[in-house]
Image (cartoon, rainbow, N blue to C red):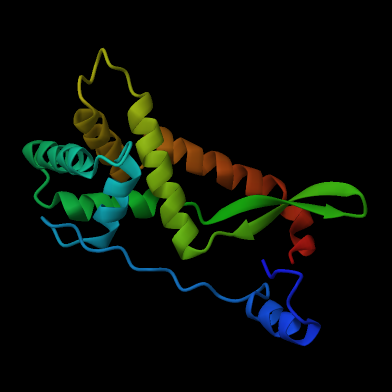
Length: 176
């Protein structure tokens, strides 16, 4: 913040630089080295634990290889289909009006839609059984295949979010 020892006029000029409501320009993530896909890089970054990017890349690329072995000719296209399938179109946000909180349904913007889809994809892949799938790559591959077909835990999560938004349609007029 601005130190209090700065003269008032200069202080106001400095404060106007930090006003709320400015649009933040997001830095583009680089493309991944194998497929040249930015969305895949975002998945790798989401899978990454404790900064070990090469390990995360190995797991994601192994999952795509497993998908290719199961008969899919283009695993990256399947991955993009899965992300588009999982991404929610509507969600609910809490809004306080007159001392009461309402769950107001709002449309999910593109960036958040992709972020939620990737988050749920990785979360539900991690939750899969170790008895049935021995590596994270296997779990991720199966979750991607399920999501592309419209089944799986990530799709159930999207449907739950959509049902909540649909149930609270009556409060849509509280949008801000």
